Length: 141
Image 1 (cartoon, rainbow, N blue to C red):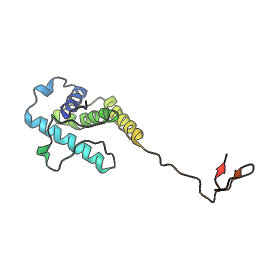
Image 2: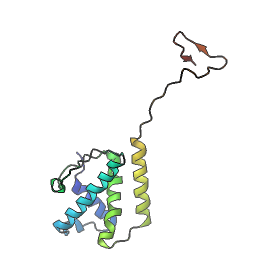
Image 3: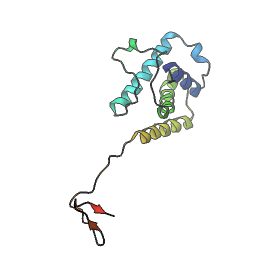
Image 4: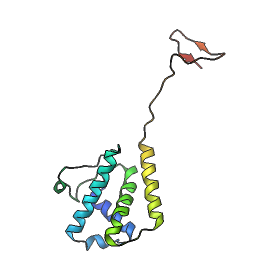
């Protein structure tokens, strides 16, 4: 089962020190945080990081009860990134470790999503001494 957007918001609140505040937050505050979450993931998407998170043109279509569709490797990066973005809203100064952890989680997510393209030897590559060409001119090592 995927994390919901509300689960991500709760985890961000826990990170900034408001573990139970999500229950006291007004609906306007929660909508504002949801918009910030959607905008953050949209910015990542614009930079080539497609997480499968549902992004809408109309902010009213996004709700806290929706599944985020995030892969497990992206959850920490998303909620820590959100915590960094919402902390100033509540007058909180984040622990420097939280910012470092957010950057490390983002880098780990990017590294795990990177695909290294396969590349074959070009036909102009010298084989060197001791290598034998087969009938297709592939190098046999």
